[in-house]
Length: 101
Image 1 (cartoon, rainbow, N blue to C red):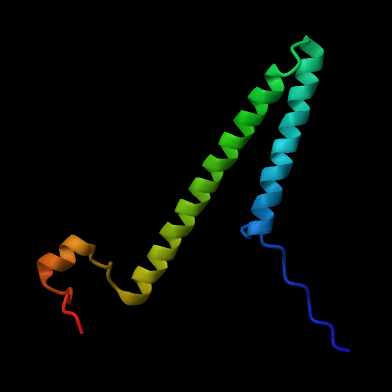
Image 2 (cartoon, helix red, strand yellow):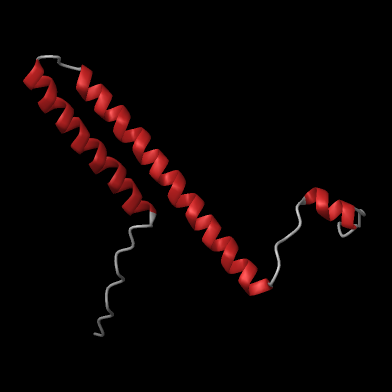
């Protein structure tokens, strides 16, 4: 029986992002619960902290996605040497074939 080395854990995979979202939200629920018990304002800080955590996580996901797409685009440009033309520029250059085969 040959054992292969385990694949390193990648925090950019979907499971890692899902766990990050769940754990950060859970931590902020706990912090909100502690502050609410301390001040006697039962659901106010729990709700506020959860909203803060979720908005922060979605902003983080957006920037991670945007950064990954920019890296992907830079790799593609480096590999092919030029950026693709958008639809309007391709039409103006006459490089779009609109014929029906």
